Amino acid sequence: MKKYRLILILLFFLLTPIFSEAKEYTFHFHQEFDVGENPSLYLDNLSGKIIINSHLIDKIIVDAIKVVKAKNFEKAKKASEKTKIKTKKRGSDVIIHTKYPKYRLFRHERVRVNYHILVPEKTEIDLKTTSADIDIERIKNNIDLSTTSGNIRVEDTSGDIFIKSTSGDISLWDIFGGIKIRGTSSDIELNDIEGDLKLDCTSGDVEIKNLKGDVEVSLTSGDLTLQRIDGDIDATSSSGDMEIFQKRGFLNLESISGNISVAIKRKVKTNISKGYQYMVGTVSGDVYFYITKDTDAKVKLETVSGKIHTNLPLVLEDFSRKHLSGKLGSGESKIHIFTTSGDIKLKEY
Image (cartoon, rainbow, N blue to C red; front, side, top):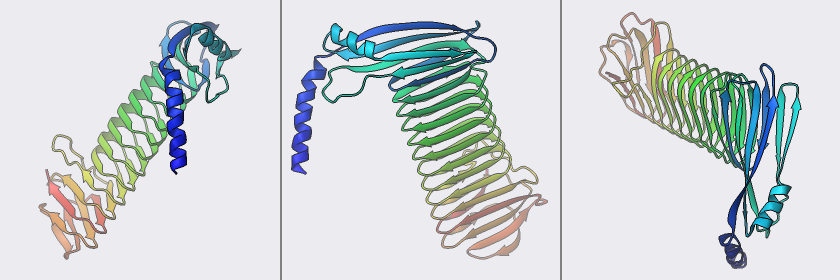
């Protein structure tokens, strides 16, 4: 173990002077493509940033900057020439490949490529990146994004969005269309969405506000916050807390080791819709479920080793220390809450 530490220390002192003396040099690339209706853009990039905006002409305009960190201009220029931006046009489809020089441990030069691309608003987008951030605005077609160690921001788009992200944060705003996300070590923030959402995330917090559509979430390790959801919610979590504020729809929540709060804030109500089912279950977490006293629902609360608390005017059908069932109003909806080793609190606003 000491041997490996000595090697790492030696590498640090060898490489530090190399990079401390290096400077950044930039080299520009520009190309334009005439396209027809409903074009598509494919781009892959290893390192840097990709910005895509729409404009009102039938052209895809590509501006790129090769940023080279090197000891002098001559070395930077050679590294820039070895970094190829290869483009191809097939009908209205534009394909861009970014080819970097082969990596060598003691090579002084480091290269990244930043893209700023203007496209017609109905362009279909397909991006593949590694260690590159993505920023997209004002697109009216489908968007397919895949990134490793890069952040994603998409705003003001209409069309379906497909995202696969590892170790990068995701932010979506003002989206009209369906969304599918698969994330690993990704924090996710969505706001003002009109369309169904399917999300599968490992190790990251998720916050969704103002969504009109159905929500399906599978979360392994992270907190889930859903605010002002107008649609069905089906969410599972292994080790994170849930806070749910739903305007309308079916509700099914399952958690292994996290607390669940449904309409915990008074300013944002969960409305119990007639004829819907509200199912909540945890293994080792507490459940807080807040509703109005004029709710029409059949209620069933069950716990194995926790406690049950309620202050609602239930017409009781069955009651014990670990089980409670009854009815509120006409009982047109169903509320079923189950915990193994957590408490249940069914309370009035």
